[in-house]
Length: 253
Image 1 (tube, rainbow, N blue to C red):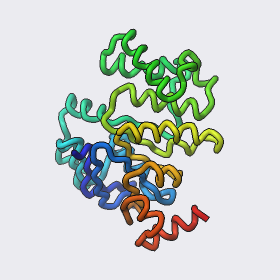
Image 2: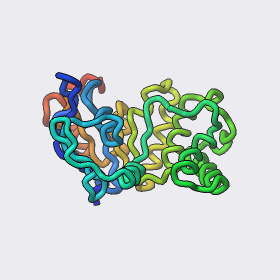
Image 3: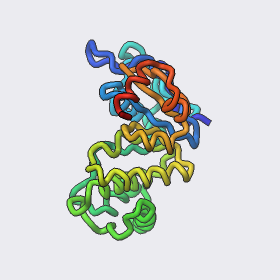
Image 4: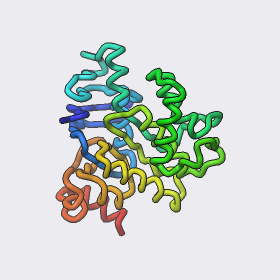
């Protein structure tokens, strides 16, 4: 079953075409990695899915339902407000910068949305939150504030926070790009365990090792479009598109 499907997504910033007819289907249980040079449109595509960017044209389906249809900057269809909110909650997002509330503890950050958005009782949310912090290896940091955590720990809190809303799919926008090299592994380890548990994931990443090991499908984007896609073995060992070959040669040297 498709959890997300896009048809011919386009995004323009004035005269700059950032996304060009991007059509993608993410099936339940799939782990898909989006790779490509900076400025290829990868992050903009993810942000468009959760409505942080307004697409210029195209269709977005969440599950079986048409969520949004726009043509030439005009909205042709949008789900009603309550249904829109419900559908968006099916996606959890982890950003490059952790976006934690500095005045809240790790546990406080994790339980905030379940309490205020889903009306979960504080005691229940706290129990679930501690379980999620344990899941990302931070059971001993529940009462620490972000300023006392390393970058890798903060990103793991951000992952736990996204998981607290029980999303059907997790979106990761270069989750390790703001980390010191020695902290990257701890975040990738959590993401690999999520993938192994069957979580559906759409990941923008420059970590080619993760894309090789954890993904079911790798998508190479260039100039705002999908240039090539396929299983990691094919993309990394026998890419067909010259731009894919050029990109991989430049970063795998």
